[in-house]
Length: 206
Image (cartoon, rainbow, N blue to C red; front, top):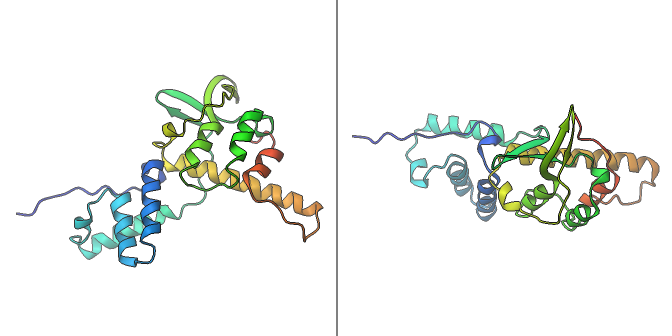
C-alpha cells in the first residue's frame, strides 16, 4: 500500500521567509554547476520536500510543480509594504528617507550595496521601526536608537523583503537618471545605497 503524502507548493513569495530563502540561495550557489542538483534544491527548499520524494514524483506532477515555482520566482514587481507586524508590534518603513536620523544613515551606508544576502535583515531592521502614531495617511516611527536586530526580520515573507529591495533599486534608478542629465557622460555614477539615502525625499507616504 502506497503512503499518501501532501506536497505544499508555494504560489507566491509570501510563503517563503527570508530565513528559508537564504538557505535556498546558499545551496543554489553551491550546486550551480549541477543542473540536477539545482532542480532538487528548488523542490527541497521551496516545497519543504525531502530529496527522496522528488525522484518518486510522476512526470506530470513534477512538471506542474516546477512551472508554479518558476512563475513566482520570476516575479519582479512586488510593491513596497509600508507596514509589517512583528510579534504583534506594527513597524513602519522610514517615513522620510531624506530626514532619516544620522545614525541610521551611517549604519546603512556601511553596507555599500543592496543585495538579498545575510546582511539584508539588518538593513530592514533600520528601515522598519515601531509605529508611534498615525494621522490619516501620515505616520511616525520610533526614533532610531542604534540597536540593529535583524533576527526578527528573518521570518517575514519574501514578498515584504523583495518589495523593499525593488523600491530602493527603483529609487536608485530614478536618481541616477536625474543625475546623469546634469553630469558628463564619462562621469561614473556610484550605484550604492549611499546615493539613495543621501538624495531621496519623502517618497513613502501613500
